[in-house]
Length: 386
Ligand code: FAD
Image (cartoon, rainbow, N blue to C red; front, side):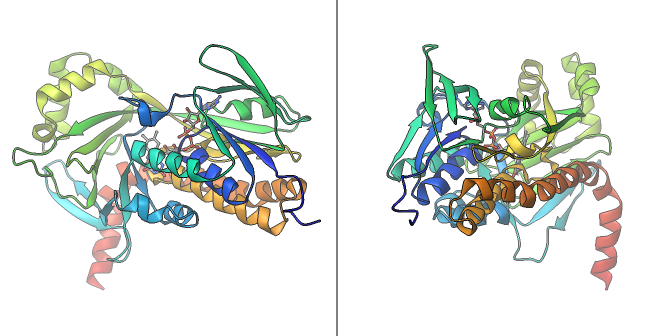
């Protein structure tokens, strides 16, 4: 019997963030019946969306995943190419370090816009239902039942052929898996946190710095980065040990710190705005999650941060999660939608690669905050002279 003569597969995608929304497109394109459950209300109707970073770097991994469901152009038309890192030294001098050849670049993309584009794309497929304000609480990997709590606190339970956990670094699906035997799990918080600041457009309503760069202020033990936005501002993120954040207890200490460490950025951030944001915000933690396996029998599978949350220094967390969607889709093709064969094959293929990217992301923190000051500069200089 061919797949089309069989009963339509019915899947629950838990989490309508960057990976869940995209994966729901992939599953719907396969002809599955898809129910997408998202804990938050519909972000397209919200005034303010609180979340991780305001913008992200989209790389070729993510672009390829968007392309395969026809979304690459819809997204990249809102992206700002970043051809190189722009290193800001203590004296305010700047020097670019190209990412690759001159035509290679990553793109700065607005997280909310990207998520909204993907949610609107999912809705266009037949046989897709999105349930906002539905939080997954428990699931049963024997029966395929999943229970969600809605806004009114009511519990809703439904049965699925497959439960797909795309519910982020603190995944509820993964928590259920952790109760099973022989499930490996490891989480690590780094001693550094992050805080988002803002460099607004200048007095001529233009970008206050060179546009097509990922700006970095590497200061060895800590660093600041800035990515451009379409409104001509730069989302500027300070990464620093928590104890340093906590030591800055007064406005005077804050300004003194920026005068000493980021003198060229201070006038761009604006003293008043900097004080307002810093003093009213809390530094947020950064976590790495590794686990194994990514599936349970033929009933559940993890994608994105739920499977492999990583520190953001390689700019690959979302990109890698989007690539998970490709890998799962290809494996489902190869095994003709037989979940009992496809899910173990997905774990086998994806797990070592994702763990390696988690490690590279951790390594790249040292590269970004410190090594760009020395090694890569020297290597680049040598290469330039060849
Ligand atoms: P999430 O984005 O966390 O989405 C999970 C979704 O599930 C959310 O919408 C949440 O509301 C929902 N949810 C959670 N629990 C439940 C539940 N129980 N029931 C139903 N729904 C639930 N990556 C890059 O590739 N490039 C970058 O430049 C980059 N920059 C970053 C900068 C910072 C500061 C940080 C912190 C991360 C950065 N990342 C970057 C990583 C990227 O943000 C994540 O990898 C990406 O968001 C993962 O997507 P996800 O859909 O797996 O998880």
